[in-house]
Image: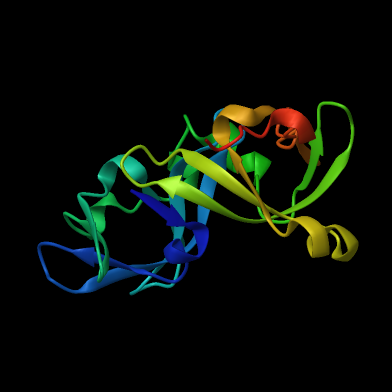
Length: 174
């Protein structure tokens, strides 16, 4: 199942042991090398410290929020050696410029959809300029079309390439 990025903002992290919220999700930690959400920065309910909830520690996602075993799964960012390089990048997908491989600018990322079972970003939604939006609206680009991700832009195969239907291709009705 896919969920939009906004569905992860300000949701509670609930403890199975106590049945109470232990934190509030702030932002995702995204690895730009594979566009996977590795964890979430959270505000601790008790100390208000900025802690990290790793994806593998989430037992379930419900309408209450993320369900975890206990408060102990929240980790200080300094203790996460494996994720240190990813966290230092502070990669954000929203508002990233999107270009085609032919260097044509498509627009900026306005939203993205995440597969909640794997936590990989599956689709990005690109808002076009005012002139282009009158004719084409918002573009939906699948993960398979993404060829490169940098600090400043996302490069994709042209989503409109090969989609034109020739005028003489209509089949006569008998």
